Length: 395
Image (tube, rainbow, N blue to C red; front, side, top):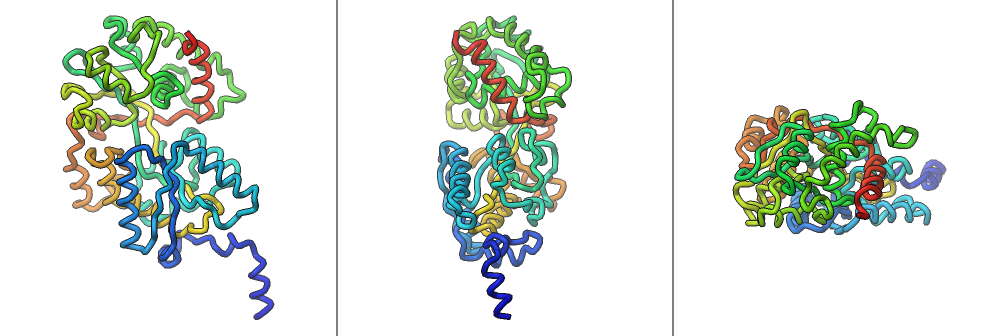
């Protein structure tokens, strides 16, 4: 017996510490008393308050203490985990949970820096609406290595006193030609500006499926030529003839309020409603999506391979998927994020609560948003941004 215990002491500590989400009662028992350091973007008071509320829930329900480590760049958390592995810290990371998606997730998965798979075995995952933006993160298969908790989808804001919804990206270009100077988009590499480029690309390219694979090894020039033809025609009709661009998404608000433009993109279906409520936009602003759908993506949380509080981290991820937390996150007075849940899987009372939620005067309902198109593989963002800057950014 003594020899067995001695042998166990020399096993890798992670082999003993990893909890099994299929044994949920054991996970919650292990999680009690743990402190989870969640590295998440901290640039929004509303987001910070929501994370603090999640902390209150997991503390009350499971005795888990949640510490929000506020980030300005998710890559900082990735770099920290990588540095810990290089230093031989394989079981006591300063990072227990990361708000992550896109290239950062792809990099951590490829470098074997993630714990898992675990996400699809969470009790509340049975309520998730499994669709492309949930199972595929910017072209990288999720494979249960991260858990979704919010959705976003590309929309256009428009001032209904001066413009109308446009049925396609080409219709938007035609409208801009007829109304020069009344449309613009943020300057890449701003995230929203790059998303506008990707929205145009996925609807103009002959085979959108090629965008799901890494850009390396593909004929970038030929595949993206329809995008550059589109932008070349669009540019002289943009605000200020495309000689300058707004610095960010929120910077567009003032242009609409000052009646300099009538249409602008957004990555949050409820952003316009929230801005109207905050008197940042006129109450005549509404939103639309072109026929055929728009790019959508999900926010995820992932657990580093060397977290010392994996059970507590899974408890937090499961709480984020609870109907109560999802309803709160979708409330435009709280966050206004899209839910990742399938309301058909909820109880009648829970589903009615989502149906009764006032999404705001300018927010489209789920049916009106249409299909959420998958993001291209993360490598396309970098390549398209660089090409855009080379063609238009230095003028």
